[in-house]
Length: 87
Image 1 (cartoon, one colour):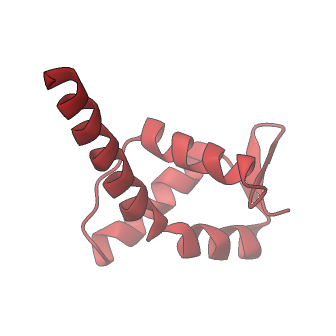
Image 2 (image 1 turned 90 degrees about the horizontal axis):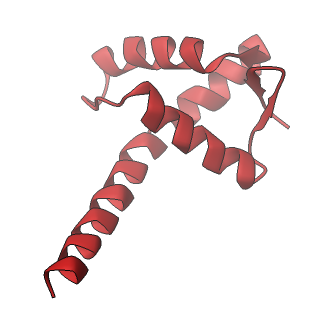
């Protein structure tokens, strides 16, 4: 029973984290619209600057990479040659 509760708690935490990162999706789209393509590290740096002025959400480079990879799988983003860009 404890394993099921732990899995459920982890799933809801992951869902909440996804929602928090979704807040930054419009920033990411704006950056890629203006700058064409960016590396993961550059997107992370720029989002940290925006986050200091906006909603206070901390996220690691790995979390951002997972989020962006989901966007690639959903065909909302393209990853090629080490950079992300809009389709």
